Structure formats: structure tokens, C-alpha cells
Length: 207
Image (cartoon, rainbow, N blue to C red; front, side, top):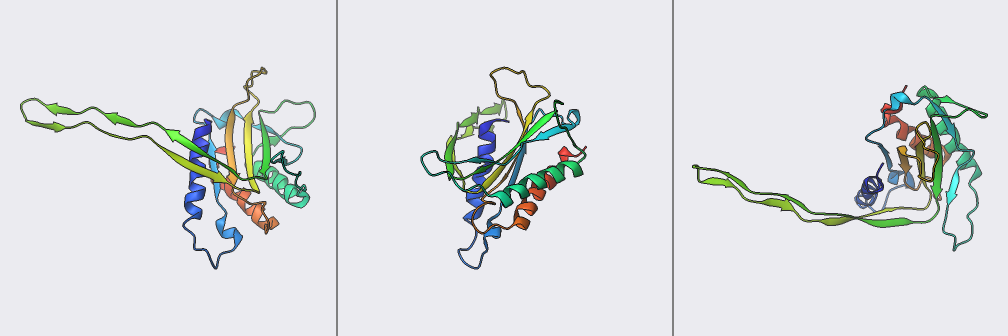
């Protein structure tokens, strides 16, 4: 999965959130679940998985380390495991090598950036003898801003089966993101619902 492809999806977060009224809304009204998968992945070729031992916290090293959200992290881990089991995946233990490795993380600082994209166009053309045609047309380049906030849960499914075991990173087969689900005011049911939704909109993962 290309980085810019996921970043372009994150643009939707800031666009959709800006559409909500500022009052009479609970925090769960701002939940946005986004998923993405590799264009080249054939999930029929994968069956077994290993889930990370724990939810990984990503935070700004210039600040104090945040308190580990034990109960919420357990909800994330158990929800992922349940959905994988319901979809027919087999969790391996011990020294067995899995087909994929799933790493859930929680971002504890606001992440933002800009995605730039070039312009493109098409040359004009016409029809001899008819006296008419189409002029050149195209679109200018531009940029898109994206942001995801403290408490966002990201789930990465990494390709272990085809990993080269060198210095290159493993390919990302699937990514799921829930914006701000571990932020203040979260409930366990909200976390579970959001992760269930990420899998629900990723039916290609079913065995």
C-alpha cells in the first residue's frame, strides 16, 4: 500500500468532521472508520496470523509518556481476535510462522500533513473535413490536508508469508483506522463497535 494512498483517505476525516454542527453531538458522532488494502493482495493466499502481544502506543518523545489504557487496549486486542476468528483466520502460536502479522497502534499526538499531487491533461484532437474538434484540457496540481488525532487506533496487517527477511519493510496488506476512538470519553462498546465496523467493510478478508 502506498503511503499517499492512505493519507488521501485520511483527508475524509477532516472534511466529514467539519460538516457536523458544533452542538448537540456526543463524541461518538465523530467516529470515522476507514480501511484500505493493497491492490496486489490476494487474500485467498493467506490463512494464518499472529496478533501483536499488546497495543502499541505512539507518542511524542518530547512529552511525558501517556498512561497505558489497559482496559481499552484489551478491548482492541480482543475485538481484533474475535473478528479474525469469525472471518475464518487461524491464529498460530509458538514458533510457527504465520502468513500475516497484525499490529494495532494508538496515536497519542495529533498527526497531520499535506499530500501533493501533480496536474495532468490531455491533448486536443479533431476530425479532418468536419471543421471541429476538442481543445486541450486538463487539471492543475494541488494538495490535500489530512489529520488524525490523539486516540486514533490504526491496525496494520503485514505480509509475513512473502517477506524477504532483509532490511526492507514488510508489505502492508490491509489497514484499518478509527479516528480518536481511545480519546477521552470513549467507552468499551464504542471501541468494539468501531473495530467491528472496520472488519464489516473489509469483507474481502473472509475465508
